[in-house]
Length: 196
Image (cartoon, rainbow, N blue to C red; front, side, top):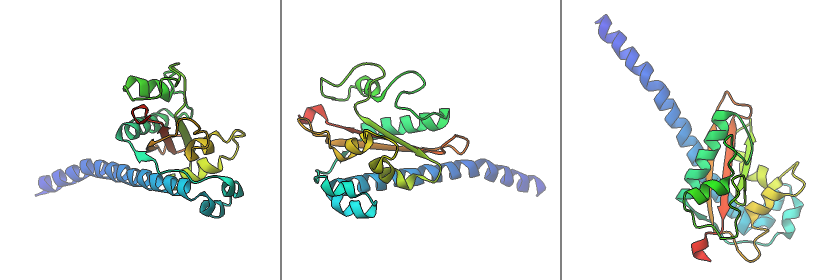
């Protein structure tokens, strides 16, 4: 009987971290899906979010179309968020010296021909990180505090969409309690060239 008891405890101990990891992954996936819905809501009704985010500048932002969820973009965004969390960095260029344009070109994603093919280039990614939790990433990027060009805000809201409107999005969120920021987010938004 003691052997069976010890064996059961060992099995439970081996199972617990897997179950806990799956739960974290499921939670982060749910937050990514909620972020996608929030992003589209802000794009379609920026005036409402001017009050919600306490950001009067959104009163002047025109409404935009919904973005379409893209599984390839979501997979690449997730890989980037996980890479930042695992390797404890926060940058558009990864530790291999590659930007997200490179990875989209490598995946044969149909980007517009004029998007840079330089290894460090980024025409497609907004990133965020914080220690509080992943629920505020869309708000954080749209407020874009500390970024004088408001590049993330423009990217998410499609404010630079003149001749080529963005159409597709993928969001990845990762967590590493031993990293500087704990939570990392990559959002890829592109004009899918096959739709042009």
